[in-house]
Image (cartoon, rainbow, N blue to C red; front, side, top):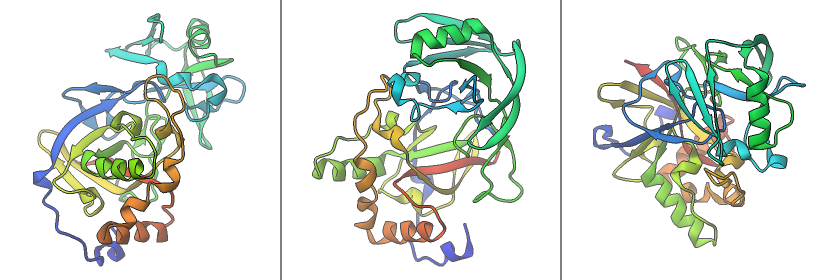
Length: 293
């Protein structure tokens, strides 16, 4: 946390009272999230999280569920499992295909949000299966393991790992107590609730009071280590899509989500601070990383 943030007068938080509800991940960027037990968490996040992505063969750019409206966001219907180096993809019809991640068909240059990286890609059989399963034209499945640096804007200088296909930070933490408060507000203005699966969190926690995750920069998980939380997570349209079908539920919540924080004196101070640092937009959850093992 910056010196300016530490000058804010905020409630004291006992993170030892936090409950770890569970963990979620997806081997495929924008694929269906799964609850997992006893995950291994390292510098790149949860082991196996977002290790492959679907890219446009012609442009080399990554395709995400939030970008893929013309195909009905079908990437979210793709389930996956991983046994050592064998990745199995399963579509909504129950059809599957297995990929040996150690046996790429070739190597090329691809792009994730303006960052070029060289990576292996997998064969035409996988591309054909993806087209049949999602409707995406000319897709290619790409190895995104340790494909680029984490977002350095709010991370400690000594923390500079390569990450997989996550959105800039290795981990995403969501507090169910805060989510319940957000949902109360959404229901009060006639909007549907957001499920925790829609948030695509990696670590799901429950705190005694809402907003506690905003007031500290880390917490400890026994047997895993200290999880750093450098900043709040700004949410995108993906939270307005069904977590398993990709169908659009609605995006109006993005315009009113922050109202719930601004109704609380302490949470409001934190949101105003982050807005002054350029972190603007609808907030839900915290970006995270493994700080100390």
